[in-house]
Image 1 (cartoon, rainbow, N blue to C red):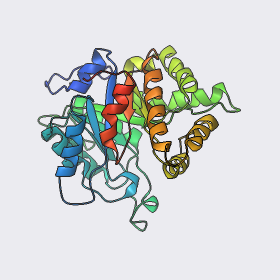
Image 2: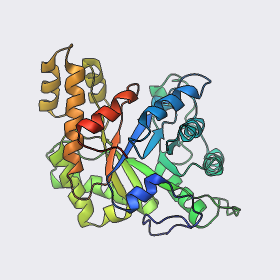
Image 3: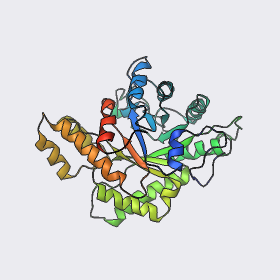
Length: 322
C-alpha cells in the first residue's frame, strides 16, 4: 500500500483519483475550495461543486474553517462526490483526540474519499465558540505520520490492525515566504525545512497560503526542487480573488499572508466600484504567471463564497477545462 518514501504512487487498492493521476503525470493541476454551509443541508455543497465540474481536478471541503461551526468536511466530501467532483477532505486536529481523528480517517476511506488534507487548525478563540475547549491531541506532523502508517502499514496508533487498510493521497498546507526579508536566504531555508519535514511525515501534496509575489515564491520553489522535495511532495500555489477593500484588509491580517505594497495600491486605486473586477483580473494574472513556473504542480483557488467566479478566472488565465 503506497510507498514509504512518499512518492506519488498509485495505491494498489485501485482507489486512485483523478487528482492523484494528474499529479503523477506531471500535468498542471487545479484544485478549489468549498466552505460547507451553516445548516443541515448538502445541497449548497453539491451546487457549488457542480459549478466547478469540468474546471478543477478536485475540491477541498473545509473543516469548520476559522473555528466556526459548519457542516462537516466528511459530509461535504460525500456531497461533492455525488455532484461529480472529486473531494479533498480537510481534517484539523483542533476538535478531536487521536481516537476520533483515526475514526474520521477510516470513515473517509469507507466512503471512498480519495484525498485527505491534514491541518493543525485555528484555535477556537478565533471562531464562533471562543470558550470551546481546544483538543490538539496531535499536531499536523503527528497526524500525517499516523495516517501514513494506517495506509502503508495497516496499523492504528495502538498497533491494532486495520482490515482493510485505507488508501488516500495525503496532503498538508504551508506558508511560503511572501516578501524579501532581512534574513534573506535564511527565511527561505526555514520555509523549505518546514515543507521537507511535512514530506518526511507523509505529505504527498501541499497547498500553500495565498501567493501574491511570484518571484519570491519562485525562489522558494527552486530551493525545494534543488533538494528534491518537489519529487516527493507536489506543490500547489494558493491563489484567490480579492473582491473588496474589506476583503483586502481581512486577508492582510491572516498570519502567513503577505501582500506586496504594489498589490494593495493597485486594488485600492481601482476604487469601490471596480475593485472586484481588478481583484479577479489580478488573480488570473497570478495563475498565468504561476503556471509557467518549472516544478510547480498546480494552483489551489480559494474563493470562499464566490466559487462561481473560478471557471472565469481559470479561463482568463488561459487554463483549459479539465
